[in-house]
Length: 232
Ligand SMILES: [Zn+2]
Image 1 (tube, helix red, strand yellow):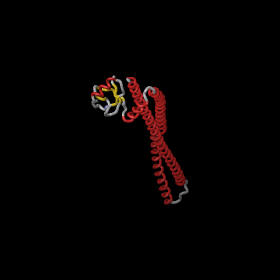
Image 2 (tube, protein in one colour; image 1 turned 180 degrees about the vertical axis):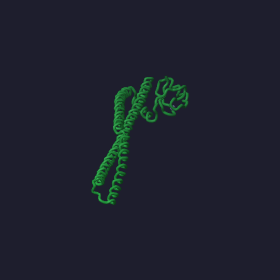
Image 3 (cartoon, helix red, strand yellow; image 1 turned 90 degrees about the horizontal axis):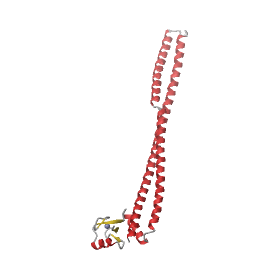
Image 4 (tube, helix red, strand yellow; image 1 turned 30 degrees about the horizontal axis):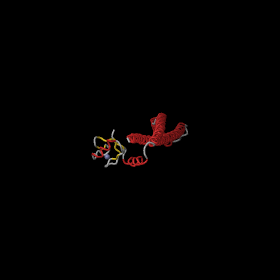
């Protein structure tokens, strides 16, 4: 009779280990899922940053073209002014004011171009790209390591499932099926008697039952919680 309890306790230990291994595998998979989500978010963020950078580059090209255009206009008006073709004082002052207006536009555009170059440099695209790549590499490394952990856990789990299969061979079918039922309710369907008390539900056992438990001649269940009770 004692053997049955030893076997049941052994089975309960294995079941405890199997349950915790299964939970850990679920947790590790959840960690992987979170990291993958992080990778996706970071890729998206990086893509947006890259797009913004391209937009600023296009804006710089546009400003540079505009600057070139106004420089040409300025040259033209300067040439005209100093060509000696200007006849009247009125015409002269018109050209002067056109030139001044181009000069002002040019000076403004030069400031915009410098600002835009500063803005683009401030975006540190190369460094950011490197940082992004390193981050993704780190995430991927973490995933690889988690996957290896899971592989190891699955192999341990399958060993323990085999151990369980072996261990139930030694338990009578009716007791095993009772155990399986109790296992759905309790993580510890098999408990030791503590004094005259059930360690599962902590209620005192009738002394007649406690006596029978001590005799170790039969499989006894707690009248309150139905757990198997044994005495060492
Ligand atoms: Zn009990």
